[in-house]
Image (cartoon, rainbow, N blue to C red; front, side, top):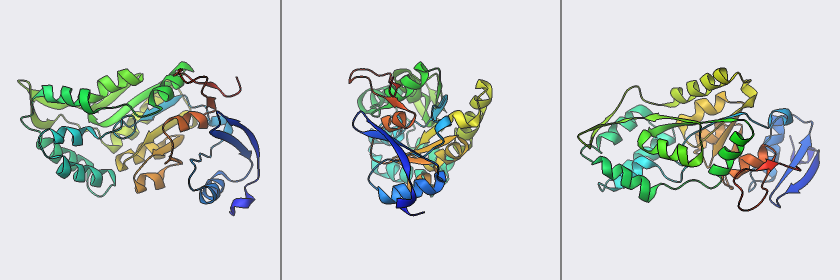
Amino acid sequence: MAADAVRGRAGPVVDGVACDVRFDEDPTGARTALQDALPTIDIIVQIAADRRRSLIVADMDSTMITVECIDELADYVGLKTEVAEVTERAMRGEIDFAGALRDRVALLAGMPETTVAECLRERVRIMGGAQALIGTVRAHGGYALLVSGGFTHFTGPVASEIGFDRAVANRLVVRDGVLTGVTELPIVDADTKRVALLTEIASQGLSLSKSLAVGDGANDIPMIQAAGLGVAYHAKPKTEAAADARVKFGDLSVILYAMGFSKPSASDECWKIAGV
């Protein structure tokens, strides 16, 4: 489809940064055409009736927070470069996630649990737009689930700070206040994320179209593909190719605009329905 074939009815510009264009063309073709024509703008194409999602399932590392926690932990033992290289390959889908996790966690054997708390305090920062996104979804009656291939030492505090209803993650085995270098089984992996999404849809009594999944790595692909709207957030190439939508330039608030919300003021975390 040529870009000039996407003819629609443009709505008002929201907050000076976003606008809706309503059209009747095939969504997939329109998305491709618009992304080709406007390569430096985040574009999300979806069915208008489904845009207000009731369930959001999100990855944590490099999605809801700005870092990869295991890489930061490795920095405390002088192994960040080596571990980050493995993390990058796993996130690109070049190597097995579970095996890569096992090997990286083994390098942390002997680390005091207090160092994990120190890493959380010193290194972990919430991604721009995360609190607004989750707070707004929940304020409008939705449910938010954090599902991470990372660790409960981080997901608990992060989920609480951002405002998630619940979090699922791997557990590091600790004995006498020291990491053993082992993770409890079963591993939270790509399939765990997909199953968590589908289970939550069923338990909430929702239609699939009312769900949204967001992540950046290859282990997020199954849940992104299973969701009503799968969003690749500053993602690896394979993840971006698998997603219904991509956010490459803005922060997580792009998703709020796509859901039909606008920011009421600079200080408010909970957004309002656009035009209200």
